[in-house]
Length: 305
Image (cartoon, rainbow, N blue to C red; front, side):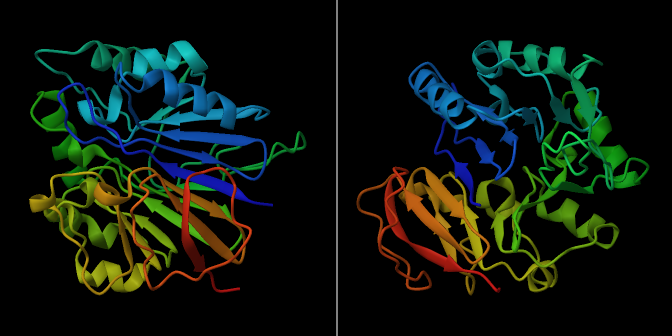
């Protein structure tokens, strides 16, 4: 069985680089992480998501935090897919000049019949538990936040004052398939991570989606990276002068790759990009017959079996 993970190359209404992902799990689960759609691309992206989630019984939307580049067009997305499971950290974030997307985020966040609040070690049926209905588990686990941690409380206070939102992001890992573990960290900033690093049980992973789009402001310290030991770091969409390129690690940069699709099996991850001119990285192996219709195949990441 295979799973598919896609990182979209997207920008918000102010042309600020955004984040948006989906995971088509190998069982009956489908997960969307963050939303950044605008009038020019929203129909195309939502049509693709509807196609990919077809036949899935359990669909969830995870919001890492309510910065506009992570929630843009959330109302439109909901109108197309009908969000019934909305995951976020429990917060009281406000904005003085609230956009329609932020107002809709708050509507979902505060709806007790839709919202599930993420925290370290939380469990939920089909998120990381299964039952006799056998839809399977998405194998998504939350490593952070710790609700009573003072650093996290400070981040919540800033969000409730309408000042900053990055550091209320959760840390999520997903066993996408057996033997392939990926990590998302939203827009956590490096100084904040430095302060909370002892509260997180950092696992060995295969793919890291670099926090804060790969910006220097979100660069993970080497102390953590050496434990995670990722085989691939995806550096998101951001202005080149603000990126940290994680020297010494295998990376793919969304600025030049465009959309990135990872087709995952227990032995390898086949990598596709939307850019026609993206040069195949030397750390990827080449396999024939990898035309799955997800773009330009640039090679495969071999996993430890």
